[in-house]
Image (cartoon, rainbow over all chains, first blue to last red; front, side):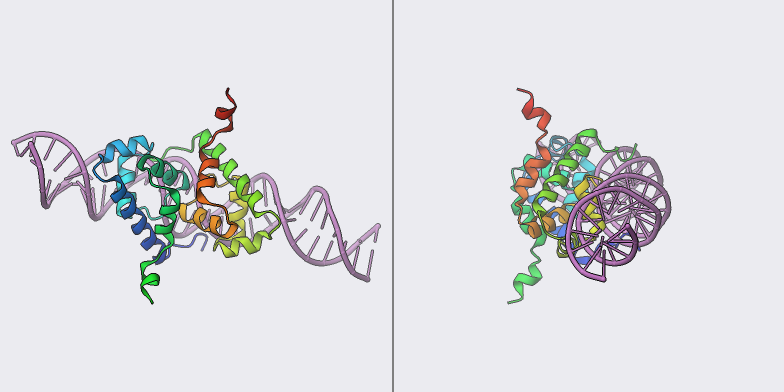
Length: 88
Length: 88
DNA sequence: CCACCCCCTGGTATAAATATACCTGTCAGT
DNA sequence: ACTGACAGGTATATTTATACCAGGGGGTGG
């Protein structure tokens, strides 16, 4: 295998990331945000729904700027598997 | 065109990002860092040399953790085109 | 001097994934 | 009825992530 398929954890992380971005967008128009981040509205929607689980670094950087969400917060959302924190 | 080729600015940004990661690795063994970040040594080297200009978000997150470099710093390196700051 | 090892570079090759576009359809608001 | 946000499906050029190769330097030990 030359490139491993995405692990289920990464798909899960992508869904959490997308949800965080969608909630950060709040009431703003998806088209407006997408154009401000210099990505297509289709791509933004796919990221938000988690259908693009591992977007490019630059894409997330631009989105974090447009949405005003610090990257560190997105990183936490990305890494933190709720199944782990819940396992107390 | 269904996916735009990378713009020259993105390739430049990738080179800066790679250089920052390489210098952050300092004296550490590339193999050790790559395995700690759960990526292959080949991939790490390609990222450091800028031959993978836009790595996945999760990849950079893991590298920033392993190397102890805050994501915000990497984001600055990514966005800040020296040609712009120099144009005074 | 030669062998060995490690770090690094750059080339080729390939499966999987991104980013984009188009389409169908649903649902809420006006 | 119309519009806009949203979900999901298909399709495709480009890119990632991985692996392998041949080779260049810089040490260290024979």
